[in-house]
Length: 176
Image (cartoon, rainbow, N blue to C red; front, side):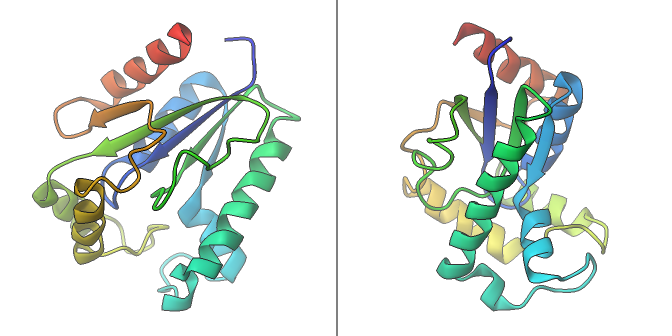
């Protein structure tokens, strides 16, 4: 893979976006940009401290996504690839479309009970402070067809290992 690549990994809270993104970025030697980390940076809120609800407003989301785009563009000065993890509600078909790189949009999903279990097992200082109820709400939106336009690959992270998911994404990138 010699051209610039951005892999955008979305899905509800607890679906494995960051875990998959970290594994893919590590394997490829690419930059990882996690929306939860960016949100904390923009709002100057350290891990372990709950973000205010205003950090999740539509206006705040626009600021976060603009900062993700800025960081992704900057990362291309040092690396051929960038992995971005974000919920992607709404409109993944437009997210990072003008970055000047081949783009693959991956959507992770798992059953609600699995999402809740994963979230409950997170360390207290995890970057995301989404609750099981937030994940359930997001899952309903995804189930109603939200954020499916522009998705290239849908992966059930409940039935596959992280290594298998990374192999599937890598194979899709090579096929493109």
